[in-house]
Length: 190
Length: 163
Image (cartoon, rainbow over all chains, first blue to last red; front, side, top):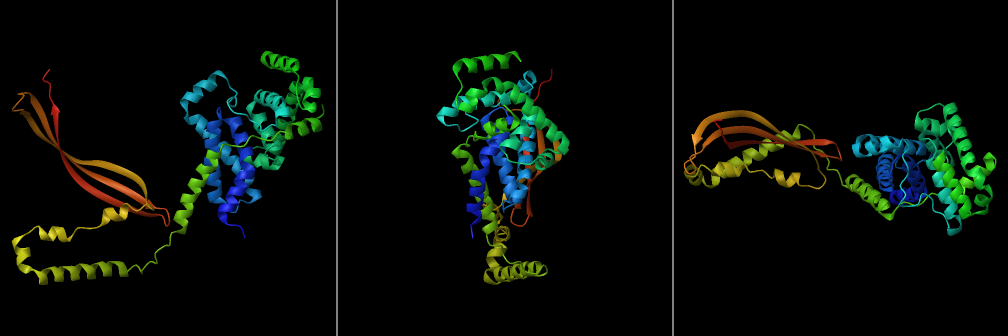
């Protein structure tokens, strides 16, 4: 039988990249995202020391609550976000762990995600990288399942609009510099 | 690119791993929890036994003090005060206790009037402030609260301007 210490480390190892990615959609800097994940995970583990998979939506809900609290309490950050409503993830560390041939794809996807409205971005993050079902996302966000499904649909449409011009390069694993420049120009203009 | 292709493309990207420091921070916090959880809890005596025990101990100490040196007690009135010294600060410095609050409440203020400083010849307002400092700790193992009250009396001198 595994010791509790082994259990939390194994659980944290598996889930922490997804949690940090989700937290980064709600916080402006990677350091804040890690702080949020630390607080949420410790609270969650104290409550559910067995780390049951069925309670993972609650962990995401804790990340969300703490991230929003942190954002509200930080006046300096509030001022910065007044200028830009979208909390852009920090740029000093990568969002995705991409191998060298996928680095540009990762950068393009990160940019495309940052252009999404926050409510759509968090649904798409929870669905694709958090591995949650629509029902679990609805529970974590306190929304109806139809709203969640609708947001996911809109998010995919937005992403398709942004990423379709680069389809060949993205599926090929790397984007050509010309296409990346065009893509960035289209993002700036939109 | 259809939805399926797009989802596949996005899920091929693995989220970046958090810094090693994050796991260490979580480890430290959870380790602290484990330390509290693993500390053996003392078996509690029945509720009526505790006051009875203290009464017995107090009576025994008083009898011993009186029987050992009755003349010393008579000659030095401070001995009784030394005999009642408690080991409370030692108990409170235990790492298992978490400080909760420190509240200082002003109970009384006495205005002692304006006096002139003998050296500088300047007026000074003399005040006496009687306060009560309450410090509280909590034992996370069983939620027990420990409160200590410390009365204090401070003399305060404030500069006075007649303008």
